[in-house]
Image (cartoon, rainbow, N blue to C red):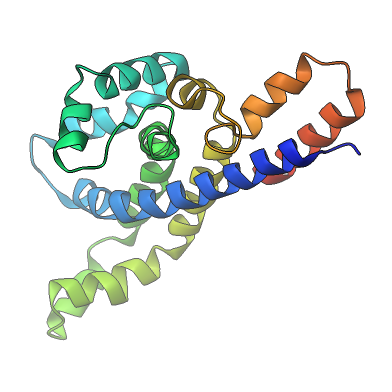
Length: 209
């Protein structure tokens, strides 16, 4: 068989990671993107630069610093311990945290562009019809921003599937827990089973396309 049980396990874990990461990115990124597209605060540049950092830092560097923050003396570990979550390194939860941070700009940029494209007239028209801010956001803004939301979902999902450096640094290589498709491909690439390697790579490219 070109793909064995270990490969299927990695594929399943990757799909779970990418799906959960995409949902979390939409929940976290949508209000931030809305704020960035409408605020005139001087903090806009700082927040925007922080969101875009994963675009200029290598995945390995991001993974290393996240591992330091999650390590024994890191502030993230102290926080997770205080709320009884436990350790994040080399766990699925740690992968989710790293994936959310690493894929953030790929979701934020389409969302922010979509909100900025809406313009003020539709929002002003809703306000004239006595629609409240929340009602305007959910019934007008999100409806008009659907193309951008779909783009953000696709990019966030595909980018998470293609992660390697971040997930390897934070999650390591634990079968069934942190071994995702990209790590599994790296492992099979060092072996002589060409059919299995080709099948796994084909499945990986199907997820990303």
